[in-house]
Amino acid sequence: MSDFPSSWRLHNAARWVKAGGVIAYPTEAVFGLGCDPGNRAAVTRLLAIKERRVEKGLILVASDWHQLAHWLEDIPAALRQRLDRSWPGPVTWLIPAAKSCPAWLRGKHAKLAVRITDHALVRQLCRLLDSAIVSTSANRSGQRPARSLLEVRLQFGQQIDFILPGPLGTLAGPTEIRDLESGRVIRKQAG
Image (cartoon, rainbow, N blue to C red; front, side, top):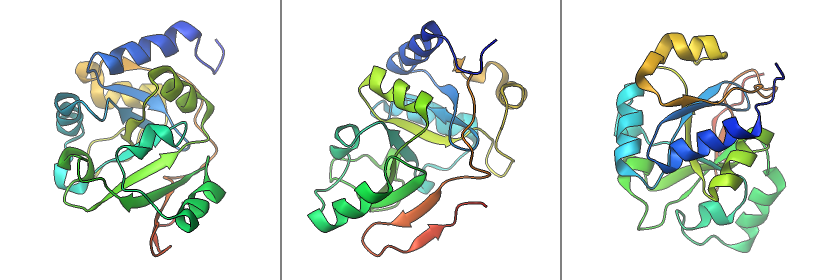
């Protein structure tokens, strides 16, 4: 079997997300859990499965800017250039959230963590959905993130609706997180 999933698997993952399901999928370094960020019930279920407190907030990944823009405040051109120099790529940015951005995504924070990914499979999924998706590591809070389909199955069993197979990216650990306004590194990328 090829490392890259067939078209029907990708379309099936998109169907589950659109229907309010929770999926697992490969990202730049580990498998992630994802769902429709606009579906409160799906996000609440994902948080329960992961045993993650809503106050911590989540990351959204997308294939292009328009999939993120409505979740965020308008940003000045100079800061937009900072984003454009790092995207698509493995940098997650903290950007002021739009007033309409729900707490179930941003947690207790005024900023939302977002990334335009360079992972080909995730980009295809977001294009199919024409939407960003939630992206949090596939693990129970405090445990090691899953790096294989088997690890996803062992940790979550039937709690998730679909696992999208595919290759992980080349990163050794989670993506770097930076604050857009200050440029400060919040989480360094694992080497």
